Amino acid sequence: MHRRNFIKTSCTACMAAGSGWFLGSLLTSCGSTVSVFKTAAVNNRVNIPLSDFGESNFRLIRVNNYNYDIAVQKTGTGSYRALVMMCTHAGNPLTKTGSNFYCPLHGSQFDMAGRVQKGPAEKPLIHLNTQQDDKNLWITLKPAVL
Image 1 (tube, rainbow, N blue to C red):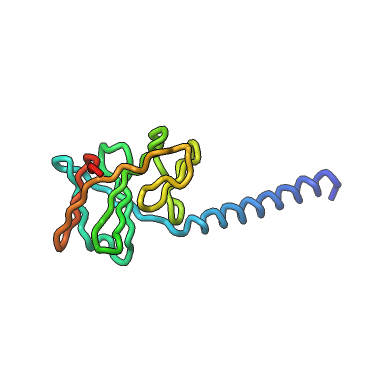
Image 2 (image 1 turned 120 degrees about the vertical axis):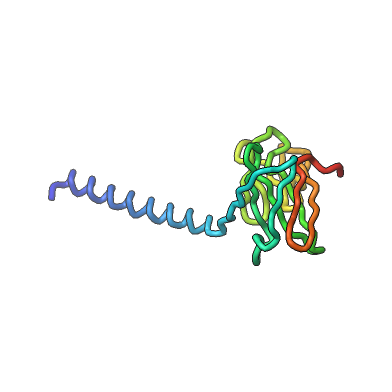
């Protein structure tokens, strides 16, 4: 094999192996995938069966014709918290990363209660009112007054 072909073949193999490892590790780190519950709002409210939470205390809700996902989490008291996944700095959609929410636009971070952990955001996430009965969780798509 000529030197040029050897270098091309070796570099191609290294790049393929490296990108495979990188993508594999990236996907593995995303292994904590959050399933998304897709639904529609009726009279500005969303209904989620409590059984849909299963063993998880967290659920991501995607409402038709609503600009942002809603992060719903069961609290230690058995109630539920619903947060609009919108950065309060520039209105960018947020991403759930482990135990917080992250804004990929400017790097703001929020804890699971919606409090700012890192700016430039200064205001907490928008909370939505929740109500529940034995079988269902109801979320009102208007911000809660805190």
